[in-house]
Image (tube, rainbow, N blue to C red):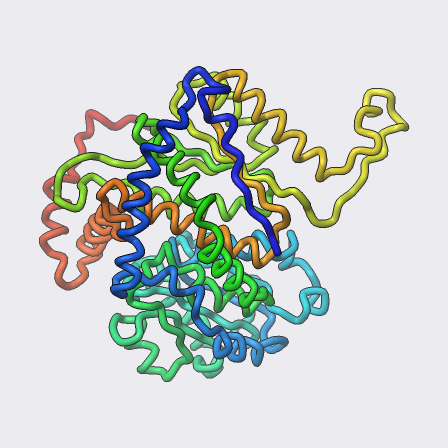
Length: 455
């Protein structure tokens, strides 16, 4: 059974002049407990559904994906934000680097994967240049079906497939709402295979639903083990989750404006990016649940060790006292390699050292360097990164942000700041029903030439 632990020595006032104390954690724990109870009540009432994903029977989904093995050379996932970041985090963590460059047999006859998220024509063009319509399976993911980037990329890919004269029913799968929305209408129109995004599961909380698990299974990930890891967290992870939530809350109350997540593994780079959406979109709120203005939240920053020791660490150690850093350590790494440095005098100190130990030594050294500069950090330790532990970590952080939001009387499940920008875009595109937004933009978006400079 995989183990996850929390080390919070280097955020405590025993070790730092500006650290927090046991009393701070105890005080925060009271708030966090209330937030935890509020979440449990919302889950039991059916209002919020992400914790229940750990109980879903995956047999149908697994059986469905198995029939595709070996049939397609490429998988294109069309989605953005919560519809793509989770899958990218799974693929980055669990598939080998350079997976798409492997031969078909070395990939286990699973397809290469490509993610169309941004409406960047260069990216879209490049992906389609790599693929052939008759050898490509497309998964379109959008709960509402109206997300403009997803709609635009889908239109491009649909036209690309249609022109090849293949049956789109054999090449397009959708993941969307069960009964409403544009993507559901298109699904029904063409009789496409489809999976449902539960109505009570928001996009950034959906990685353990068909949103993340369908494409993961299609590239050979053991999604049953991911589910078991999430389930194990719910059954056994309360102590670590409550403690880290109380620590985060204490630093939010101290108005630390930046929260850095820094795993010491390139395999968790995309997990950090997934975390940034989850944290920022859930906790960055102008109003509390009674409509009072409070401007709550902190800015999430993604870093990767040891790479960002050579870039961001300078700021973390000597810049403003405004950051809490969460390290993630892997006790064991795959494919270890021992160094041979006895042939060059200045590399003798590396002789016999393996890469995994070196990476973790870099982490330990960074922790202490930050401690000596009175910069607070905490560390999550995962004994080994696999489907089980990754599923655990997804559910773990979803609980953390949900409870932190509810503990502070904000809604961690909406995103009004995102919706307004979407509405202005719809107005500029002259979408029906958004004339008022276009008029607002034309009045408020004016720019004066005197404030422009260039060639």
